[in-house]
Figure 1 (cartoon, one colour):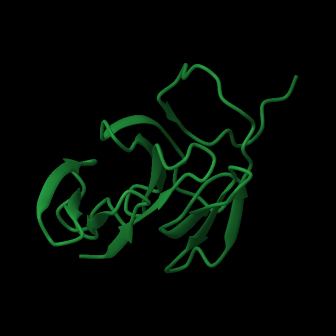
Figure 2: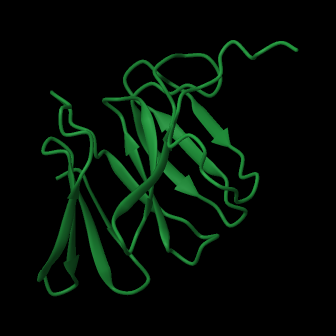
Amino acid sequence: MHCAQPSKDGLIYVCDRVSDRLQVFKADGTYVSETFLETNTKGDGSVWEIAFSTRSSGKVHVRADGANHKIHVFDRLAMKEIYSFGSGGRQPRRVVRVAQHRHRLEGNIYTTETYRGQRVQKFTYKGLAAVTAPNEGAPWPANKK
């Protein structure tokens, strides 16, 4: 196990990093459910950290996927992925081994990177819209007009 985060409704979300899964338990230890992420991931696994959105009253959670260099956004109650973003690299908006992340009240996501990533990044919340590309890579270099 790599992380354990309680939600406001009393459930405990546990990151089983190497098994590429997130498990949910009641506070007394009773198993509730599980979901898998990037199951072809080898080595360090895909579920490194979880944080709950403060903007959506905890209806959304975000998973850091350090091995695949991504951030995955999930509907917490349905346990379904809404979208993901990121790709490996040291350029802005790319991530290397995301170790931790946090949502803040304004909806921004802050990430820290481990191993040789050695930085903090802020992903700014720009509002809600339809998801047109469920898996976004980082636009680098920026498209020129």
